[in-house]
Amino acid sequence: MEEIFKNFEAKKAEVLKQSEAKETELSLERQKEILKEVVDERISIVQSIPTGQQQAINQTAQKIKDAPKERQVELLIQMAMDKGIIESVVIAKNLDNPYLLDEFHDALIDHFYNELVKRGKLKQI
Image (tube, rainbow, N blue to C red; front, side):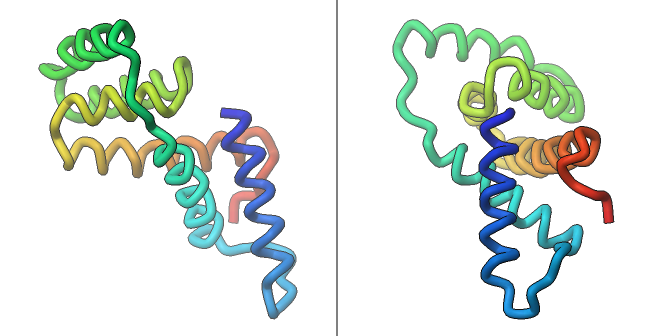
């Protein structure tokens, strides 16, 4: 999570530096876009998972597969906070539900944004 926050701060500073208007604050939408880019970059790093870990991921996916969709998203977000984005994304992909993966992605961005506001790293606009 801290890595996401550091990357967000760096990317936000870069955007502000490049801004022709020399803005001092970015809109809520632009901040979320930057956060989405940072999370997407982290997700794109997903590599093949070792066989031993793959079995545990398959078991975890099977445990949450029958839960209601909203609960699945909640569980995936909790896993992202506890075990990291990579593992939670792999589990989400193993659920073989593109809609759920998209919902998880959107909820994850909102969760990280709210956490940044809560920690005082961002001002809510």
